[in-house]
Length: 537
Image (cartoon, rainbow, N blue to C red; front, side):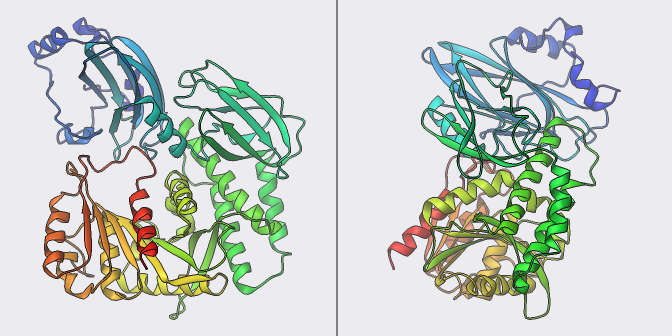
């Protein structure tokens, strides 16, 4: 729909009302009314859960800000299911005329599964109706709607919202929590000695409408606390900060100047402090509630990592530094469970393209929505995990090779890294970069696993399908959705066929899905593959 007003305000305009159609109430007759009026109504054919509105908006979006979508869901019986939904900026959804949810001014849809709704389908035809507004966003105008079982919805929530269920992690007297598909459970707040300082149970509460609030925390001392959300079959944990966070940052700055230690440790500490200070005063001027929450989450996440470094406390995720043989320096994220002691297998995550030149100021260093699911997988399967940067927008294959060399050397100086079991993963453009690294150092990696890799095109460092003869015998696993509209599945099909001609050890998975994964553990296939490689040695 077109409106000549500021786009973010147009979400509150009921565009359909002049045509006698109430928002949320939509049927075949409504569609005919719009057609008779000559409005741009059309059929969207998307086999996956993700719809990109820009694909259907036409050449110009200057006066376009609202999309209305209606879908028929045919159910053979009356049944209870779950709807996982997400959208860029503002959106609302109705089922059979009943409003399910409304979210306003959402910063992004990086979680790719924002709201978990318990819904009931009636036997026969059900109408899902969605209104989605882009606001001023000219990059992301997406809708994700995924229907699944309530059991699967709970599993996905426990992954996507691990370390991220508290709505305001910088706490004064109270904080709210989001529990997704769960309407009952218990929350415990513990100090760093694991003593419970607050506990509260909730029952029959839908937090998709209002969050559950834990209050009465004003008497707690300032500092970090752990929050445990105890659900029927899952436990998820998150760190919060009680008190004046700005004061914590200022005291940390003063403390860093007094710390003694090895040169490497002091460099790590300096980088961690730089990141914490940068996040505390971000240059962006965005006031959406979800963006403020994102910033506060980042502050607490990396602030706690810095706190652990300063206090010599065990924290599995931290910023580390490297120096390569050419004198280049840089930063990376290491996640390593304290239980890993000997012959530690290592997984390196290759990054996508980035627009920055400094890891610590790039969004990637603060992107916990994917960091945490991968960290949990690494712990589950017994791996250390490195998130590399590849020099950001100054990426080249050669400098990335030097960076990986330096990162491995740095880790080997402090941990018992198993050099026979170093693995690498990536997706999309990062998948292409993985294949390039395979040609530069074919004997380094025990195996690689990539999702939806770009293999038929490339930059100066090469086109993967043309590099196959140089890849030697490294085991490869590719996963590519059959309905991927971002990177055509033909990239992987042709690469696999060519690799088999050269007798490369390659495996291929082609699920009936698109490019977007609703659940954050979409790298599980890689960890399972790597664990199998180790078991067969």
